[in-house]
Length: 132
Image (cartoon, rainbow, N blue to C red; front, side, top):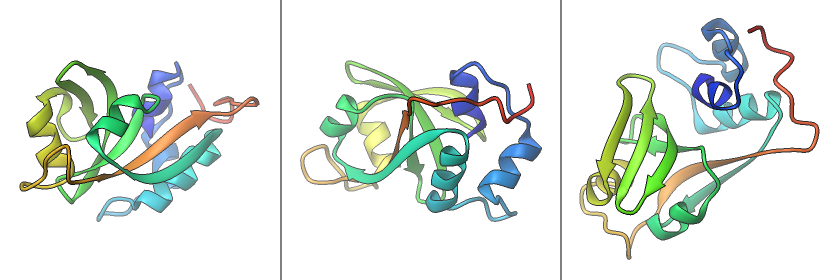
């Protein structure tokens, strides 16, 4: 969620993010990330999307990654997907690498869907409740 805040020009402290997303040593759930995004002023929708639908979705968005944590997709250009991974930073993946990390090893763009959290700023969107 800190990455999402930064995208919109607001630096949110790690402490604040951990509080609003109820992050534990095991991480955070998609539901808690959704709750945190709502607290930040977003409308959220959890969805299972194909790669083709993902390419049409508004960015940035959050995807479940390697069946263990979440990353932010901030750009898709042709067959390259750009992510921000809290553990590793900014990374680029080709389409097939991205699909296998997002959906699973046996996935392809026609048959599988991956877990996604779509974010939309709403008319009264504001991150002013957070420190800068």
